[in-house]
Length: 148
Image (cartoon, rainbow, N blue to C red):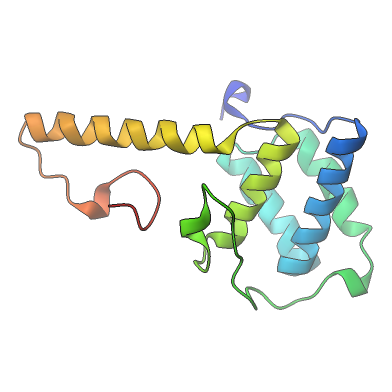
């Protein structure tokens, strides 16, 4: 993964961004438990959502949580998300989508804009494949679940 496509390269030390990073660490520990949170961070790095410096710093934050701030059960309660990711609420990806919201907040990116761009790209691909007669069933569409 090239570093130019990583959404969050490093954690800013400004108070609001640090507060968001600590809320995210707490969320990860609470949602996935310590071990699961650390695995999720490595997964996000492989996806290109975060860089290695963020993984290292967030690992320290997660390891610093008390036992009362973490648990070992996965996906107890479905995550409820705000728009534009609300249609992922209650899905297996919902917990990771909430992390993406934290990453976007910390990186000062507009996730809504990214979703709109992805949907536009999806529609462009659909039109192109319709023009050339390629069968593009919904199972192969790019976009978010629940989209029609």
